[in-house]
Image (cartoon, rainbow, N blue to C red):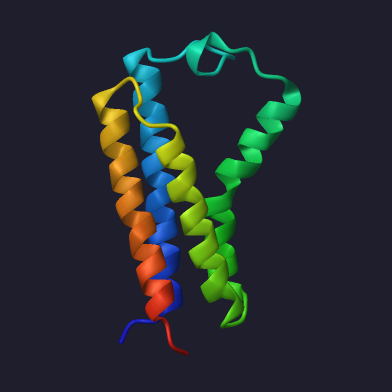
Length: 122
């Protein structure tokens, strides 16, 4: 059987790439203004820092999943994935069909993380 840590880390990488794909498509589609958030809102440096911290979570989860001891990492994965589900649902619907599709894909990935972590027995 495959190691659950590797599976969970791989899904976190898939989530990161899905978010990155959405950002790249948003640039090419012209669905944003440089330096502004959705709706033309001008963020502060503190808000950009908060966005950076939030977007760092999937990257951090790859490392933590491979290094933190069981059962701690099991619960960290569940909590982080549920956070992303709530965070992404709060932003729906997005302007582009591609964005909404990618959010649904990320919700599936987060559901897989919760399922694998929940079923994880060391």
